[in-house]
Image (cartoon, rainbow, N blue to C red; front, side, top):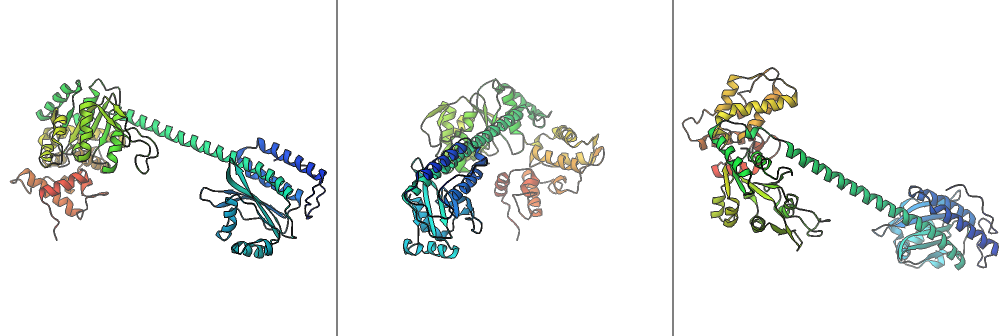
Length: 535
């Protein structure tokens, strides 16, 4: 606010205003009010509090008060001091919330009542204990606080105080001060609206940026063609490639069956990429990774207020996959109560959002995957029979890595080349004993585990020949059970890893991570194999 010329007034400093205000005084006040209104009309919202303090100083000097304070009500009902000015020798009101001891005073202002005290000993009621103590402690003689309204709502208050003498509070003075307070109140109200607008714009930008990142991520994911899952020459795997090549051009539902880590997601991506829907990204959902309380809203979307925390409408994965492909990984983990809704989408291509009643139509091709025997889950009542048959239109059995051992060298070199590029290491050969160990290992974690093994070896590699340390438990050939069954070999290997990790399944370097499998999968295998921790 620019420097203002001193106001001429017949009211001397520290003199009590008279109720019969002179024409000169009234005219001077009106000029001051007009000047304040003009100054606040175009003040930048970041300078509002500064301008209010300057205006308060001028007003205090003009009317001869010792202190002037401006405060704003918060959403929680507290009254927060934004600015205060005082004559020399008088403390300003501390900025921030008023202390709880002044609760009676704050309640009166919040109710829209003017608070005026000429003589505290006579004007304060018995219940104003904290306020009476405040008057005594600060040496305050007289005080006036005027609540300020905007659109019928109390937004704050303007206060004036006299410390050096007792002051009367005539009605015409209060009326004039209400006008000044109104100028301050409108300025603060405009600032708050601008702050809300900027906050809303910032949130919109944040959401827009997030959406752009998600879209970029989906596009990048769609462009990635991981070669490891489609690398091989074994008859079993070549037969799988032939099957997915035949089904890709159709719109049929595909069910990929196989152990964890066998590359089911890569095969699903290959089916999508060879289909007529390849121009749009494939949408992926891991049914085992989502809590049961959230999976419905993730798959089918939600309406605003559908549950606590649902602050906005959100489209589900099926809506996003309209015209594209949706990949439901670990579909056997889908809660039983949600299976009818998935069945309806598969049969009729329609559903309702969580908390909504409008039917939404989608055209999304479904590719599902599971490492669980769904037929057994049907017999046990954990999976709907009609949903199983609807998913089982075109089942594809993905062989585990131990049944396609001739592909291990090709896959190993695929990973070596991948990590050579990312780590900047040139590998010319894999040590013969290391390759022999890879070929002898049963690979319970399949291709994912092989990739982890190669990555670790690449990190430790210091020369052109990749050495895979045979002393590492995860790389030892399984010689202890050469006469036993494959299940016995797997059982012994999992048990060794569990004991080495102290039976810790989840977390960094825990058993599931070392085996290259999901914790839920490992827990299932432990239960199936009947493994028990030794005492």
